[in-house]
Image: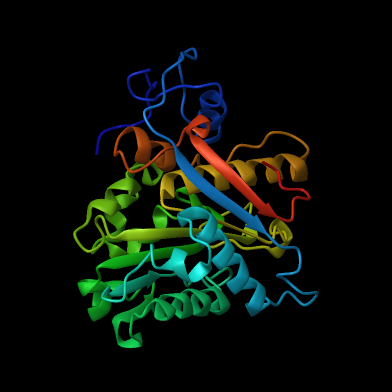
Length: 299
């Protein structure tokens, strides 16, 4: 693969006032800022509820469902959640819910169940729905899927800087190691694979108890998680990962008392935009709708 560690020019990356900050966050060197008229924008919904996690760390399933419904309704419109979910999937869709099973911080079962219930409420029969992560290539539903819903928790990652929504499609690749070059810079190309190309209707980046720091390929320490009690929802995985990274960086600064960039840099997120046209990584072009609990929102 081509070496992507180079200076990005204006032609590569549309710059606004926030581009320098996000470029630094993702480890991308830039030239002086230049104004550029945005071509398009995207919307991200950030919703939080301080009561979603109880004193024992358990999720409240009813609050999970209510948060998802409110986020989807804000994102797609409609007077009621049922109408909004009908804009995500149709009754004749075959739906794959792409989850994540990483042991220390998996997609919670309560979240998977809430999404599945909403899809079935639209009229999709249970036989046409599957929830999987590492088994997607062996799933008849995922191989025939007409619609995908992508959901996973955000965490730091030893190889790619962060494990987010873009990286969550790594298990669609027959040869996973082919995407490890240059700190996983080309993860955005995963979304061109025939099994998932142009099928994703909704992305949900879970910010319930994000992992903001780690050392080593399988590191997990609960002291580096915190009850942010949130979710990010949108149609653009690049924008969602961008906002998630900015929240992680703010938490890292608060925890360590100084700026401490991700190591390695999560440059695959910006390259998914500027090289692979998957979505938007420029914060100036990302509209954040903030719902619910606002304390210590960090963005």
